[in-house]
Length: 91
Image 1 (cartoon, helix red, strand yellow):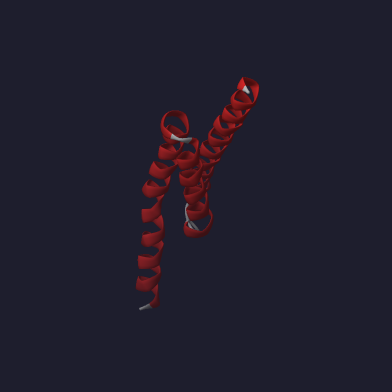
Image 2 (cartoon, rainbow, N blue to C red):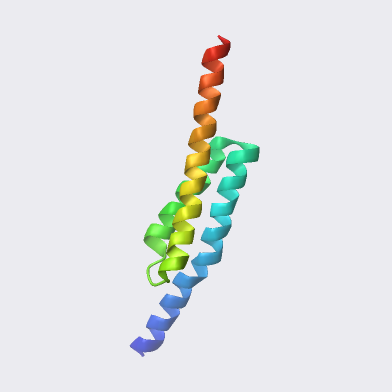
């Protein structure tokens, strides 16, 4: 009985992988095209979900999820800093 429950919990954790990858890619797209705040928010959601939700996945998948989330955060911060710099130069 415990083995079947463990398999269900592990499959639920692995079900997060496509969602986290999609959120990571969406954070990169949002940082580029839509709004840097949305991009950083999605990246933080992907990062927290990866850190606390994905426990028994392979290292490669975990690195991909962390890499996408980190890229989204960096692009959002870069866009924010460029916007601040341009606004200070204009005034």
